[in-house]
Picture 1: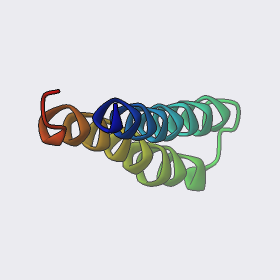
Picture 2: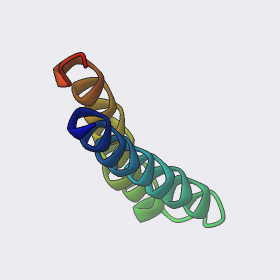
Picture 3: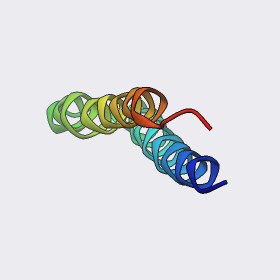
Amino acid sequence: MENVALLEKRLQVAGTLLILGLVIEALCLLWAKPITFVLFVAVGGVLLFAGVAVYLYSVVSTPRS
């Protein structure tokens, strides 16, 4: 049961990072300024990458029950 709780917590973190990244990228599409592209790529992209990385790490590193 500990493994399941740990996996669920990590998946929640990964999902939160992915949602934050998508929200930032969606908000960046509303403005047409050069700094918006930097925010789109830097902040949104990093959050999306972090979410995918946490997801993959949590799936691979959690031992089987």
